[in-house]
Length: 210
Image (cartoon, rainbow, N blue to C red; front, side):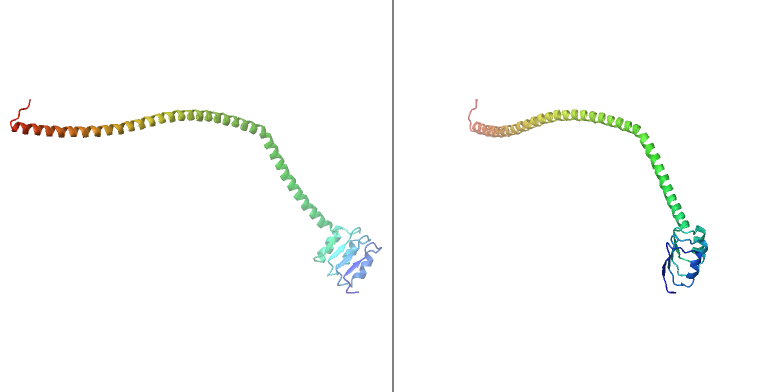
């Protein structure tokens, strides 16, 4: 069966000798020898299977060295389990965990430091709040005083405005009286002029004026 692509030999009694019979399976891609007596020597017999891509070796006698040797011979081969690959993944996972732990430790120390500073910061904030409230009370008192002064000034302005209005009215009345007085004075002057002219004419005609 030279065209065979998958072969399941798991949980059988095969040994390394059985793998000699796989040499002609040039198209084999999948092989499962889980739970068998296969060793590194048996894995070495698979190096001629150029198309082999997946190999399962759970609960066999294969070692990490034998698996690595077969992977070097067959490019792209995935072996399950792969101790080297699993160790590498575990190492990377450990490095990530260690980095995360270090970061968490730094964050914890920072949090502890900040937590230690909280009482002092809280006391400072409380003091600042008290000073701010005191200043606000002072400003409110000053504002109340300013409002009182503004009310007093408004009353004075109202009085001055009333006085100015009265003065304007008196001025208007005085202007009217003056105009009438000027008219009366002009009439008097005119009458006096007529009287003087009449008297002079009367005297010129021989009249006597007492």
